[in-house]
Length: 287
Image (cartoon, one colour):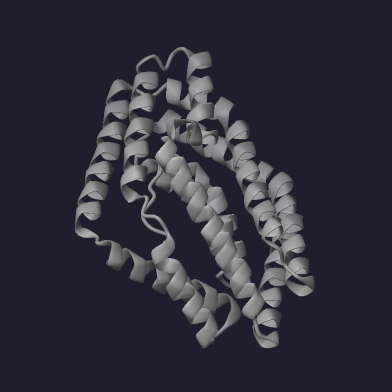
């Protein structure tokens, strides 16, 4: 919930597509994934205008990455969702939700590690102009975020948070009953605002990246820094930001658990059908 822009979001699209696809039709999931390498390239082009040789290299590496992700990672996601689906039918626990979340986090780290050699090679060959343009875009985004933070009130954010989550949950289980609506309304204002803390982290992330890119020909140093910035950005979190993230994560998991306790038989059947359909799509794609 909220606007948490991270500058490693281009590669995170791999996970984002999977998460968003839960709310989409099976046809859309497969279609989106089959064009994933192109989607990733277009997002990268929003930040860096590649020359012909760079473009060819990036497209080739993205194609290899998606092929690996399809064969190695999608089965892992399907296995994890099967555990979640079984939990929904037999009794879901907060620990199972945490396990799903941690599994996705570990999956993201595997993607970063797989991508690192190619990413290091590509980034080491960027021109000064490409690097300068890239950071100018990041700074503009930071300024946009700062203006949003000034405009948004805590009450408005709470209302938007509740509305957003209500829509997503109803897409999964159908029309919400009064008890479920009440749980969401009570949950939304308890979430600690993190927009300013996130912006502070984003600026620190960008400064670290800038200092690294100055000496980008040092590939070993570049790769080591990219590993931290993309796979373990929480190492740059402030203590306050870490506490807020952990608190909010717990509140989200607890809400999902509480909602699960209120599901009607009809809602539970619909949710399980959606998950099982998604699992089948992941299996098909990986095959």
